[in-house]
Image (cartoon, rainbow, N blue to C red):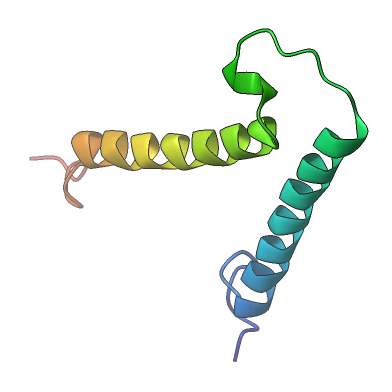
Length: 82
């Protein structure tokens, strides 16, 4: 059933990617406990700041790309000529 689909569309791959992403976020959060940081601003001294910052920045980039894609979208027949 999944043989013809691209590997990024398969349910198994999507689940594996989510597990990897959550594991990376957990490693960054645990690293915050193990490594003493020197916060430059007051906000970056909070626990797991960089894990949350990276996660929220990624979500922001996805939303921005979808908004730009909606703005730049063309009709299916745009390049067919006249």
